[in-house]
Length: 111
Figure (spheres, helix red, strand yellow):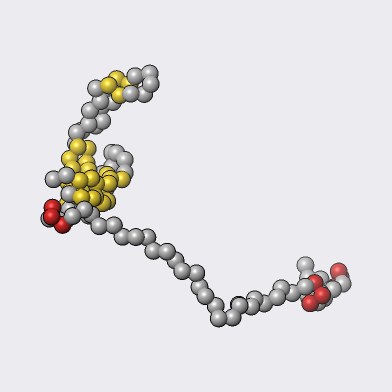
C-alpha cells in the first residue's frame, strides 16, 4: 500500500491520525510511543546523530480499489455576494440636537 497520512499532536500523549490520501484515503487512528525518545548526540548545528524512537501506529483507512484512480478533489465553493432589488437603508444616528439633556441641580442629585 502506498499513500500518505496526516498526524497531529506531540508526545508523550498519543498523536492523532486525522486524514490520508491515495492508499490511506480517509485515514484515522493514533500513534503511540512505546519507548521514550532518545535524542542521541546533538551536533552544534542542531542535527541529531543516533536518535531513536519506537512507535506503535494504529491506522484505519478506506479500501479504495487501485483502479478507482487518484483521490478526488472537491473545489472550494466561491461565496456569492447578496443581491438587493433596492438599496438597503440604514437608520440615521441621532445628533446632539436630537438629544434633550435634563439638568438636575446639584443639591437634588442622588448620592
